[in-house]
Amino acid sequence: MSASILIVLATVVAVAVRESSAVTNEATFIIDSVNADPGNTWRASDTNVIPGDGKNFNQLMGVLPRNFNSLRFAPIKKIVDDESNEALPENFDARERWPECSSLLGSIKDQSNCGSCWAVSAASVFSDRLCIATGGAVAKNLSAEQLNTCCYRCGNGCDGGSPESAWYFFMRHGIVTGGDYGSGDGCQPYSIYPCGKGRNTCIDDDPDTPDCSIKTCTNSNYSKNYRADLHYVDSVYSLSTSEEDIMKDLYKNGPVQAAFYVYTDFMYYKSGVYSYTRGQIEGGHAIKILGWGVDDGTKYWLCANSVEPIMG
Image (cartoon, rainbow, N blue to C red; front, side):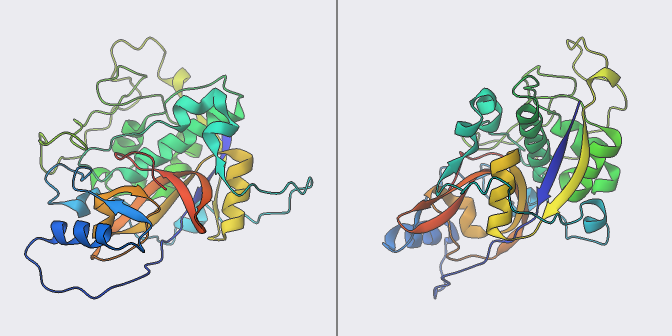
């Protein structure tokens, strides 16, 4: 089974930098500063921090810097005007446009304390687009586990990878099914114990990338043959950072994968439309964009992170 897929790599621009004094507790300072400013469009909390102890944010940031293969694997697609000239709505949510795939589109994956965001978001977007392309006939979770552990060209598994290489892997090698940890879903479910929101203890503070299971299903209860379970994409492409290009492709084909630089304050996001306030760069992170909108005059992307609730 195949479908045309895209990658979009966008950069979040830091705005509204404010002066800060020396503090003994960075988390408390960030949370109090964000919540006390009536001009902020979002609210912060320490209840959503991942992993539970909040000490190693940068190990979750798994997008490696782009290299010479990035645009070779996923060349930028030129967007042409839709022949129908259909106007894009001010607010859009892919879950509402494709209700037959809403359970996949709205699902929140858990990368645990592994820097596999590049793999988790890629597998999720491919799952979504495959479902949409087949009119809901193929509604399956595809395996972030296989991508994270077996795509050697992608990078280093839990120590980071390349979204472009992930999609090239889908095109060249295919990917089997596989759901969340402990779900018993598909051929190769995620194998790293979840320790994100609401879980205070990680089994391993810095987990190694699991071994690749070559041409076999790790789920002994899954009856389908490994080779018959593979799914492929027909083509891979990137989008420019143009808002309109991203919106057009999302509206027509479904969610996109995006990467951006994460600052410390983002790790305390609770609700609202996030914009940078303070903190250092923790690293590059990959997420899924499934819509857009305008809130009290502020434009936003509707995104699904790989641990936290859907965010604006």
